[in-house]
Image (cartoon, rainbow, N blue to C red; front, side):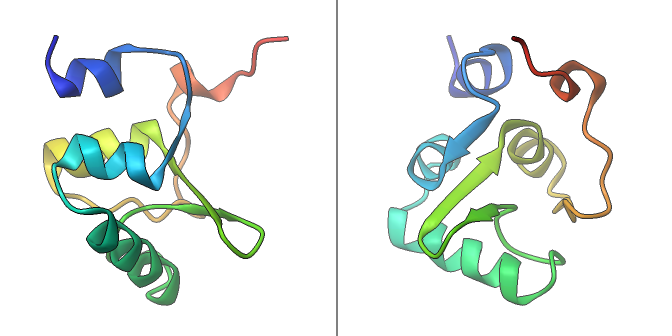
Amino acid sequence: MSSLDHVAGSEEHELLTVQEATDFLRIGRSLGYQLAHEYLNSGGTSGLPVIRFGEKCYRVPRWALVELATTGRVVRLCDAEAPASGASIGR
């Protein structure tokens, strides 16, 4: 199983930690956090797409990470429509 299959094919978690995202992108943890801060500071125009929960908790939507990795396009999460497969939450 490739790392893309691991991130894209598994439905375990729709939100990944920055560490999980950096492992997938094969970049360092520090660079991942730098890119997360860049994303927040740029208004979502560059960097690693993250959602911020509190002061130190960041999560990367799986679908936005796959979009970045496969197309190079940074998704501006506040303007994006979530893919239908990830839109519902199981109860």
